[in-house]
Amino acid sequence: MKELKYLTIDEQLDLLKSKGLKINSEKVARKYLNEIGYYKLINGYKTPFKYTKNENGQETIKKFIENTTIDELYHLYTFDQNLKSLLLKYISQIEIMVKARMSDLISSKYGIKESEYLVADNFAPDKRSRDSKEKKFLEIQVDILNTIREQSSKHKSIKWYADNYGFFPFWIVCNVLSFGTISLLYSKMKQPDQYLISKTFGQKSKTFESMLIIIQLFRNVCAHNEVVYNFRTFKSLSQKDIEHIYKMFKIEKDEKSGKYKYGVNDIFSLIIIFKLILPKNDFLEFLSKFNSLLSTLKKKVDKTMFDGVMMGMGIVRDLNLLKK
Image 1: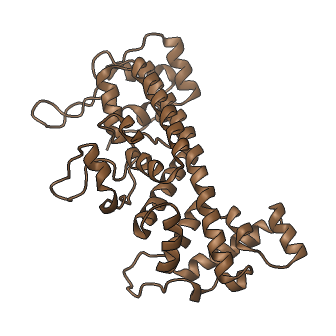
Image 2: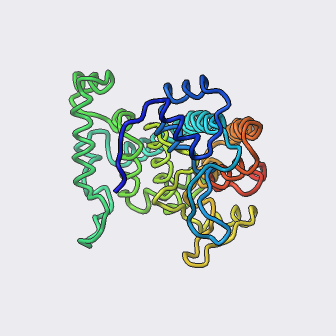
Image 3: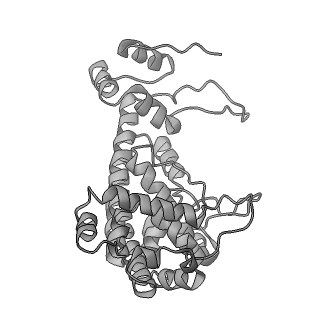
């Protein structure tokens, strides 16, 4: 087992040089390491800049590709930071839209008191399998009631309804629920209710359910300031009803899994979701801003590294195809 020890900034620079990373200005490099940290900057963004295999396909010493600079890692870090902000903006817009549709349906169909709408009979029965990882309705119900209780003294609207009515309409409650809880609640709705909501987004129920999970997972990564450009979700986007997009981008299927190689659980899959859910003008606005981020990065890093970043995002064709 390797010995782990603390390294000073100077020792970190020496280590990076020994791994083949080019330091054009030690003053600037120290600034990067002081302000961002070795772990977040180097470990978080080194992947496109390092050798991983030799010509025989075998693992080799993981040094940086020749002439790779610490500035390039910093530019990728900056790109990723800006990307998180951009994604969060449009994820938040979708979150508002989803909450509004669910609020309308639940309130109009099941009542305005939590004792009326938040009951098991209004939702699909839990799966009976003991091996199922599905969250039970009772668990979701308890989570929501706990959130209401916690927010009743903090959130102004929740407190106002508590003081004036003594109950909490879903159109108020949904605003303090996490997107993860909203996603779970949708997954527990009866199929006709799922259909009514997903239909307003032009999607089928199961496709929309997979979209919500992927959106939630990307939202969490962005909100927690983790690396997002090469993030992969455990949940795959339901592909059956959107195959026309994969064919338009000429994406091949993996022989073993039968799933498309890209646009399934990567950044490209999230962009596909944006294309299918966001109003057209909003999607075009997103695409313009995203392409601008790519253009800036492309000017600042080597082509091989840029291609590696694009591959990490699952983007293998010009995204302007999605304007059609």
